[in-house]
Length: 122
Image (cartoon, rainbow, N blue to C red):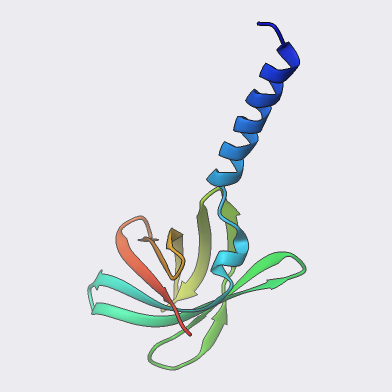
């Protein structure tokens, strides 16, 4: 190795690029979404969901498809490429983990069992 500084610089550059790619920007989730919850006992359910940034923190809201009542999620946390959310629905505490599929869609699981797909609303 003739130039250890160069080698070290290249290693740091690749490490920072791989770390940057591994994280989804929280701004991706900001906006209004139509979420399809597949295969519930009541069949497939569509429910509106939204995320906004307040003081650099994501706040999530979910709308009950039957009553149209909007509820704020109890927690929203971005960990790497996944967004972990928790909210109350029908008297139950529910968790959902979602991740970016492409620029207009996300995919995930409700309670680690039920598939969800989100489509950005225009």
